[in-house]
Length: 432
Image (cartoon, rainbow, N blue to C red; front, side):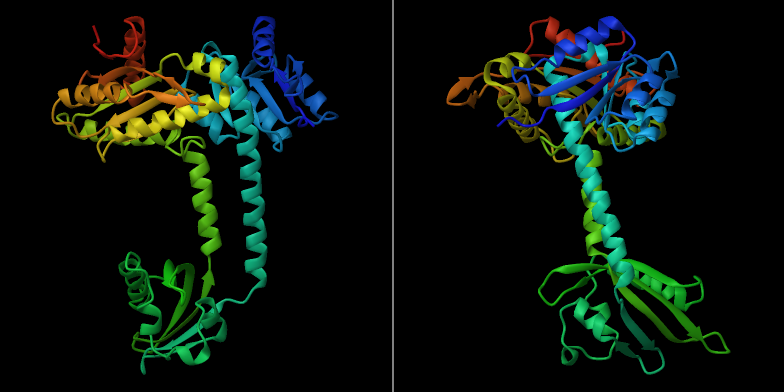
């Protein structure tokens, strides 16, 4: 039995673009997608009032909406439906703002093909429902935490004795007779990376420099693992302002921390290759560019890579093979880089590399040559040997670019020069 088709709503007022996207979404499986079309925000919202949709493909420039205002109108009205932006405006800042304001993806029209659009639709729906599940679990966790008892502690600073409640001991798998009433039972269990920060925050409060003690740190459980806790407390002071007692609680926030890591993983990492995505690459590149503004001698480079003949692989072997290729291609790239280099998947078959802290421009050329050499070993799909190549554009930070985005565009331009020159090669960007 075939799976239920995805109900898609295309909101596009350009008839030519609408026909093209309909063609792109045609699939060998007639039950893959069901596509409806509206040409305005008003028509879109009217339809959504009585029709269930799995995803909205949204043009940002419509008769009754422009730019982020279009996204806000649709997303605010139907936040439960994932949205992919389709636009003719290649604007990285607008792309980032769109993602921050609820869009699942941002696709530039003249760079879209059927494979990219189909993959983006499936990934957006899956990613949206994963975020929703994580949000529901976080809400469930907060309700449970509210109704549960925290571990309590009461530290007599004069005798240096601490009372630990039974719940405190249970949090770390301890029996009543397995713990002594001394501060070392707490402090020696703190993760080495958290000790300095925790003791500093505690000392600040006991010195009267903060109104209360609050700190998140990891504590060693009896089973050898570490649990994240939020420790809170408040001190009592003598008439001469010396601390004589401090009491507080421990809340187990391990699950909350795991959810935070999951959210960060989804926001900043590509689900296919498990490598950083465009957003995380952009943040790292901006930091490098800020360093350049402080130190004009600082040298780094951006590599822009595109898999040659990737559409041929998808057409011949299928999308699953194409995904396998991208994952293997990413692993090959990583093996050619230095530990300090930063690799990201920024598009369907596009990758960016930040080569940080170069001593000479020849280092980037050497790495590009090493990548091309590494791809001489064939890939295998279903027992078939296939040779894959890449075109690489190189842009150095010392050509007086104005912004970090300019550097990426320069590397992109150099990559297209490499493709036009015959593929399986690199080109270096020159402002001339």
